[in-house]
Length: 197
Image (cartoon, rainbow, N blue to C red; front, side, top):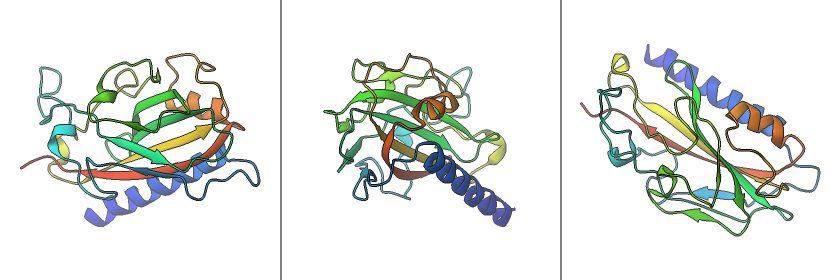
């Protein structure tokens, strides 16, 4: 079971990274090899703290957190970037899906503090996540998976689009289509989460 789950994660990760690289490929010479995405809330590939997980409630009895969005920062974008798009993709969860969908982030913004993505802001345009609008909806693996590890892939893409170019409410798939030919590099960061025992 563990081996199968690891294989599924590896396959899902390869597919998502490959699809983004294809759909949002920067033109020749426009890549940003130094473009990085970091967080003080967790280490890349490390476990996210429980405060980032979704809150317990009538519709989410198996959740454990406070729904505090992580701190995120990025640096070294490609030349010509006018705005950024930020997503978080859950590789497991049946089906795999994107819960965080934000774009229209102005080029002069290079970080968000903890909790800042948990609500709307003039600093970004809200898309539509798998379960809710595109703002932060923290980790909450379903009870039937027990304490297995889930992986959450954060991606930021630089674009040559004006921050107000895209309408609110785009899904992750619709955003990918809108960014075709307009992306200027991307950076990826991965967090793990396991429900407390």
